[in-house]
Figure 1 (cartoon, rainbow, N blue to C red):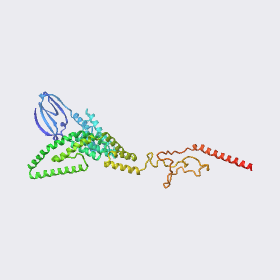
Figure 2: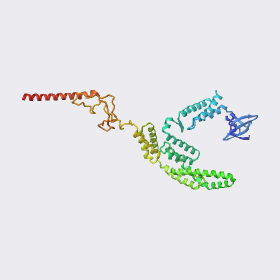
Figure 3: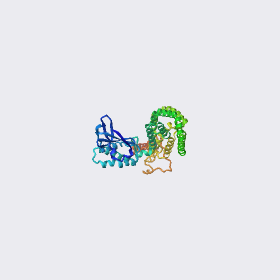
Figure 4: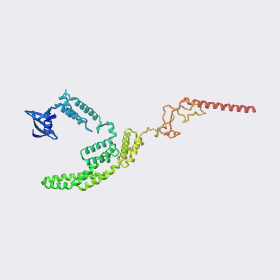
Length: 449
């Protein structure tokens, strides 16, 4: 067995054979996986190794077992691995996978026994493509409807930053992860992503502190190394490198100034500047203490309330939205976004028509029958002087009839006609009795005369 050559993977990706994953199990226990080609009494195997492909030659006599993987089997596994899809994929990405990978397989292997997995992947991509075209968005494996994206953009942006934070942590970049956290805290402190971000960055602070300590230790050597490197360059190359270093330093200073303006507790550092590293180390220690003192349960409750307020605003339930935002403002009193939402909800609640129970205008309409609020019939008139107009509405210029009780307590209902009959009869009987008494008095007086 001997090594033949190394080739760039890019030079071989056009070959369909490289897609297979054959297996050679040698008698000495070694196992090779790649694309196997028989050449006389030997096997040549192309083994993918990152960006390169290693080609090995193995004598057939040294092979204990040769497992040939069919091309459609390997390709089907590669396509099945495309599910689940990535977050926030644009429509163009879905279309590219369907056109360039899935559909070619289905045409090439119409009766493949491995087709089921590819059909399943194709369905997933087509279904999700339809949702994306409809305006929906996939984040953290969950779908957000287009309608929600309109009113919940604040939380969606925070969720994207949270995913960035997680990506940096996974890549072993705690400082970049903290910067993503800082962006959430600076611009989306009332978001539903913020409590989760606090919990996740708190766990990573120890790694960040260690990274800063390492940076401080390595800084002197880095400066010496850079100085030597510049000294060994020609004049024109040195000039180009120095210009690049100057630009790098300018970008750092701009970012640092922006962070200090926003009062970011833990500012960024420059690997060649020891003072900035020490400043970051001090900030990290303070942040560890501050983050540990945050009430995650309360943060979660407040963020849920803020999201409810955003939804109420979209549904024009302004009084409810104002109540939610004012409650959030008690906790995040300095956040500009929260302040703006409080003012917006107040303005909307003050000017928009209101139909909620207890609001002005909800119980001030005059009785439908036109009768006095008590429902009694005037004794001097057996019938109303003028019948009310059934469909008449109060004139805008006339003052509304004041209710006997506050609007929030009064319930107005139309009196039923039969309920007034007993009162009418009682009034008539009283009138007849009065007339009888007067007649007796007059008759007695006449007899005495």
